[in-house]
Length: 462
Image 1 (cartoon, rainbow, N blue to C red):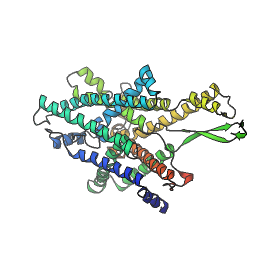
Image 2: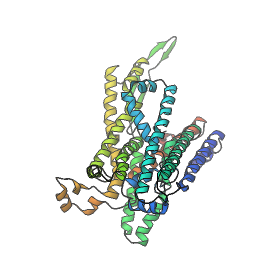
Image 3: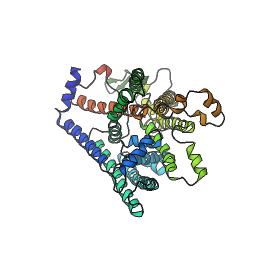
Image 4: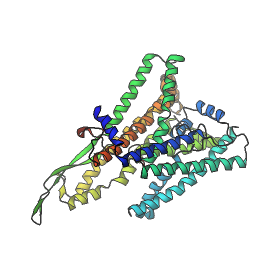
């Protein structure tokens, strides 16, 4: 513990690192200030009451990623979700559009061009979502002066807020400690934890809905989920690599043994955020479309907590795990580089056999990582809404008669203690500590953890 506090003190002894940490905290403070500035012309008290009634639906899920700002319709209500959605679209198009694929391979110049297009698409999506939410507010009778003027004001306010939040995230990434977009989501979730603790306290000691044993079981489940997340996030498969000896001039080079580390969860929290962002589209559309019975029934089948929603959610997470890994890791390039420098995997021929061997291992551990993310992510769905198997056409009657109600309708546990939020909190916290620790070690300071147990870095959304 003494070494931890010593490392924490070292953060503020290094001028550059101290400035980065203080700059990051200042930007996050600005983001939180925006959480208290409401959009003009909205009855925020009634709107917040509406969100409290819909805490176990898609509204509650979207409200989580906005840090509770959507329920108040603040100037930052849309948060970072339009930027995430725009990033998903651009990355998907990279696979099918040759121009984007070429830009991605051009290095820093191509990355800047794709980032610029992502910003433009973010504004377009923010405008579309702003129009949708302004329509929902007016249909619900929560606008003091509904009409075209209110719609324009809402669109301008929310779109500008989204652009500013996007700028804050980029500034944290460039001038702060990194992971700007992830830290903004992290701050939005963490700010709701005190309210969740208060909710647990009231359920046990005020209303008496739960007893002490239930409280202890929930806390133990949280600790177990956090431990499981840390265990898997640090897990990796090490492929042994041997470098042959060779003579360069008068010197003997190579001859050492090393390993190629492949992380179980290379994508971090990105697949979860991507999948939830995609599924938020039909959820938002269901709030607007109420005049078409056919479309309403269709959207109700993929509403929050429905079996089809959970199936699409799990499928989306696994898909984005493979998609993201395919972007950041190319087995053919790794095999070519190993052959170029005289490296080989014992028992595997160089070239294509090596690439196939690496790809085979990568496919297996990515599948495990995707299933792990899916398992962690559906925990809050089960705790809140249950598994509504009684809504299925074939087994619905049997499920309704034989399965317990808590399994079908959920336990109504506060969403902030769900697996998705814990996954983001733990993942981003580990990334942030790793960023700071890398800065300390680079300047010949001891990090937060001993060398033997040093936190392994992984890519995050920033």
